[in-house]
Length: 212
Image 1 (spheres, rainbow, N blue to C red):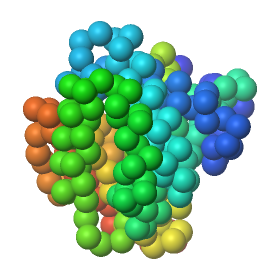
Image 2: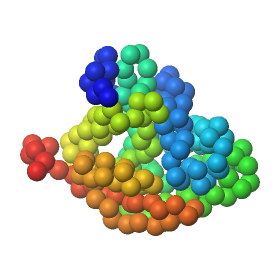
Image 3: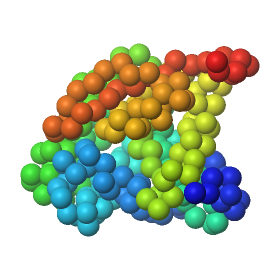
Image 4: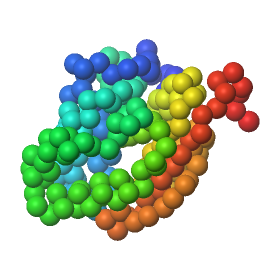
């Protein structure tokens, strides 16, 4: 398995607006088989791909304060994370209305499951100011090569430089361990449409002091 530093010209930077369509495809492919998405969208992988692309497009379109970070190599988007600044991760009344067409387009049963998923996440969202990470995805054929780790290093560098708390949700036990390596700690666990989800917080570190 090659490491990410062998991918020609790998660069971690802000996503440009003209790259959003490509990035949505990366997120949809990279997260197609997540347990939460199987539960929400169903067993058909093509349907999951379509549904998650639709929801991701609506997410980035409605939450326009997002500051996505991408990994780019060989002229292509390889991975992406969203990052919502403090006070911007929960939808306003207007943003909820804007999300309705995308949810309706998923079909009534799927829309109900996605609504329950979002409501459970919202109930666990911390009251303290935080940067909300997600989605974080690496294209399906490139996972396990360290690309996500490079995106996380840049994300955490920004958190520490600004003295900000980080927060995220994940539905995969292996991701819990991945995020723990970046300093996140589990602060809660709950079922979301029947799937275990972990809620994780990261306290800012002194950027001048290396981690232990």
